[in-house]
Image (cartoon, rainbow, N blue to C red; front, side, top):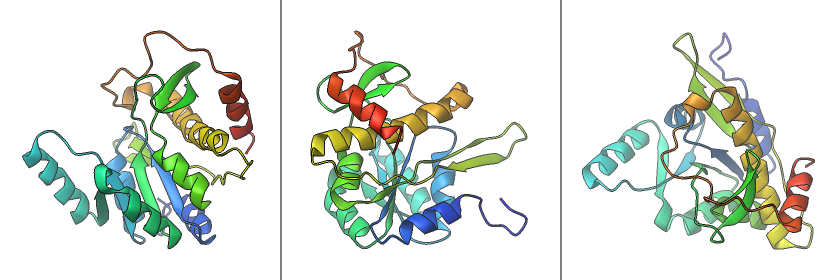
Length: 216
């Protein structure tokens, strides 16, 4: 935070929001993502996408805590229409995007030099609605405090190939996540197998989309 209490990087979010196309903040199970949500929610409505825990009592406790911090919680299974409405109204939606899928079921993305498959929902919305992609993270500093980073916004320029555009949008999110994890891998909380057992070389389409994304 700055001496006056403002958060460095929040101006980036506000500038992206001023476009009127909505803002998607992809984050990850890195550091403390709930603190990240709280910091954004202090400055206006923030809709967060949550995945229900198997233990319903623990799930209710967690979602109540998020709501108490000012976040508007949308459960992932019912979130699509509300997310579209929020983004069309120029609002902000945030969610961890680091959720692996079985090979072939999601969007192929290059992550730490290997191909993995991840959900397409947030990237598809960014492409369909022209929303700004603004990756953001909050993590634990060595002094016991928090550190925050808000990445520059990216808007995917339509190429005429929607699937390739979705791959590009996904790669933007995962390039930001990879860079963040490389700074301190111990703060990435991932308890699922993230990559297929056998590495799949990037297809020509994925490789081209990856290269394009890195020059957006």
